[in-house]
Length: 110
Image (tube, rainbow, N blue to C red; front, side):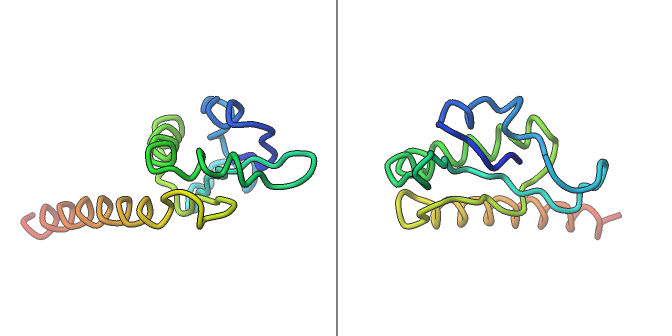
């Protein structure tokens, strides 16, 4: 996704902020979501508090999946220690593990 978001509102505009901006057109093996604000003086610790909160990050991941139909490989953040990013990673990994387990069971029954 884009990497030069000036404010949280730019990130919340998922129609624009979730679209991949690098890589080959049609290549969908890797999808990273950038979830950070960089101001003219550098990364924003203050805005990282909101961006790295569980509710915001989970909504961002789901919104981008809805826009692109892709599961993110990475959620790139600044200041991971601020907010709930480790918990978000656990939640997403558990959800994906359960989804993959169900898919495997269906495949093995076939």
